[in-house]
Length: 545
Image 1 (cartoon, rainbow, N blue to C red):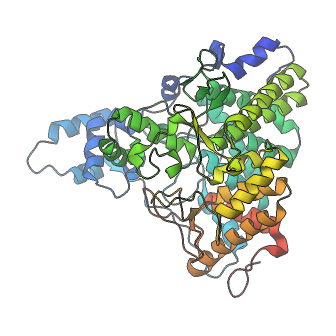
Image 2 (cartoon, one colour; image 1 turned 135 degrees about the horizontal axis):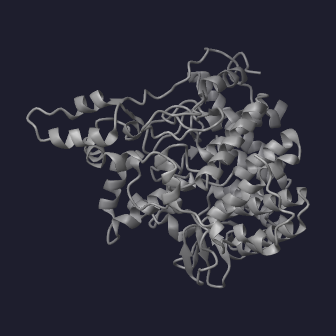
Image 3 (spheres, rainbow, N blue to C red; image 1 turned 180 degrees about the horizontal axis):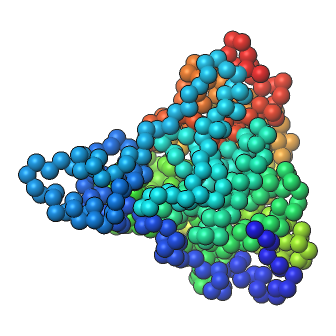
């Protein structure tokens, strides 16, 4: 990849990707689909629905990852011709016509190995190479090797991967950091955005935009030239999130963009599709059936938008705070997403500076300044003393305290006094024996109490330390590390999420069983061990250092 030559572009041309006012800044889901195999529910719809409704597999993701042995259209036609025949066996039909996606991948641990050694040994186990994929596969090919989270997650995920990269860098796997960053740049170039994961059924949405953080990590490894190399992709990703901005009227939204009553612009999570998620099809169908006085398509889009947020699912997105059928993700302006968009704007400005394009730098810095002011106006709860989400449809803040409140600190946009008050609120309301809680609500959803997640611990530690709240940062980091190590000592594994109540257990809730692996836990664990040094808790009787 070569950096775009920005020196010859006019100021208006520089802004075209920023403001989405030109045709080059548009994004089409149909175009993205056209560059990949059709998703399973499109090529064998009747068979797909029969298998998912019949619950042939305990995990609905299993079938969408299965590989057809022949032409999917012919398989579906054969199914339609035979399904009403006496003695027809659907499970046998599927087994005869599909290659199973495989069992959940659980790495084989070396009992008693130090945790650092265990993680270093996991990277090869979790690595994949798929520069080409079989015909009719739901997998999207990637030019470079990559690391998957583990368990049921057999593909590369967007925001997961940034925290995995932190661990790879710590393990000295800098070549793999570059390879994965290049993979994400390739997906932006190929599909116009970074999908949720490299599967065709994820193309309709993205995930929290951490690509600029990946670029910053690569720049830390090799130097500032990395910013210029990835500048075109950062601008293209920015354009994806900002499509529709210029045509919006105040008090309305289009795709990922919301224009508030005063004309200020912020972003929301959104999905280009309004159908059940293929990998959770039956769950979404049942959720929509429970919704009262809502079109099912609206519920499905909000569920998909919740998946784009990475917090799938949480009371944070629910109208009543309890029932998934009240989900209204697209009505909410999230503080974490807009903090990440601020960071993206600042990073593009920095990249433009490295290629000596002052007009570009000024344009994106101005956008970042406006966004910071809008976040302070709409997402700062002065009464509570912390950052919150905003309901743009109801024109009011959502006062719940969640771990997302720390993203303005993480990206450096918070004023010092607001950072101090946010730290006080977090200490009082979210600190638990095992780290920082995701929310204060026990809803049964996996992004709620009592679960804690590695990426949010890292955001908390980095954000608080950035504002000299060092004691609280160390407290959160050491508590979470102890939780990770306690479970590792008992079961020789690192898992996707943890119960922070202090009993040394993995987390629960959600749509699937607790997964082992686990990419982002591995990465955050290594970085916390490095950051805390002698303050890092000792694990297991023999010690793991």
